[in-house]
Image (cartoon, helix red, strand yellow):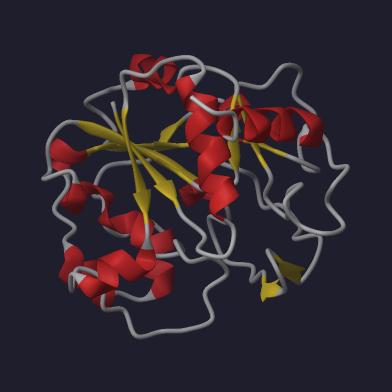
Length: 218
């Protein structure tokens, strides 16, 4: 499976842990970081707006383009901790849906600031795009659309014609919002153990264990 992970330049350990947590279950996936500066340097990402909550707020929508519109691809935010093989998502492939997400309810944002002091703004379909399982064969969204479309059109999935498919919440267990037993993927939505003040959130010890594994000599 092609897997794209959102990359936060100030916190590379987020990506390291997310990637390593996947590779605990399978090393067969092609995993790629979505690094905003690199995409800007190549001219793929030219969106001029500033103040995004994360470096990958909009680069995520480049996944079909970066996949050459071939096969299925998975995007997840960099603050995920996987506790299963993402290949489990393959059972949800269907002709009725080109994009599958966890359809989080209209959750009340618990704080106006997240991720190193960045503003956490409410909007429709909040958090849905933090995990997207995409049939790239059926996508037409290109880099020009990503760079020029309104934020609400991108996060509101205006770029897909078919209904959005549903994934179980266990694949996007947002810490502090859900209390799912033995979730398949943990999402440190408001902040994780790499940030001051979040050192003791749920699953922080497990995240640190994976981090230590990434730092061991090969």
